[in-house]
Length: 126
Image (cartoon, rainbow, N blue to C red; front, side, top):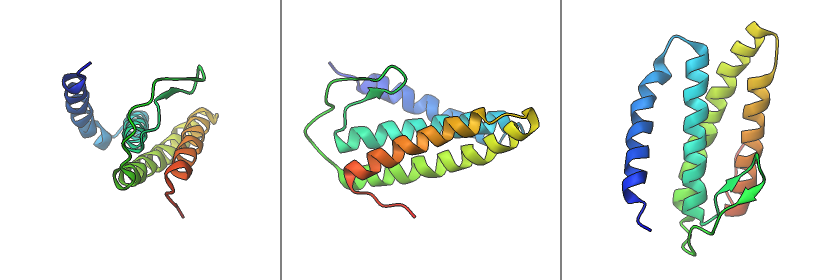
């Protein structure tokens, strides 16, 4: 099944969303950065040949391929980490105003997932 057309459409949509990252709304910046982190994490999974997973339903898909591109995976993981840290910063501000920790908890779970994948490809973070 050729998915290159779908990937191209998703990439175009993703790039158009990045303009929203400059929004004055903290919740929009949080959402865009969280989405960007998720996209980059999926990119890292694909580059490393790690099957896609639905972590909320704890299901895994078919292996992406036997090909591994550790360098590309590490670049994507670093971009995901940066986006998640930005989301955490914005989420902390929003959560403080709302008196909750929902966004911080969401990003913390994403960072755990990132560390798990980073360990699988041998990437190191500070």
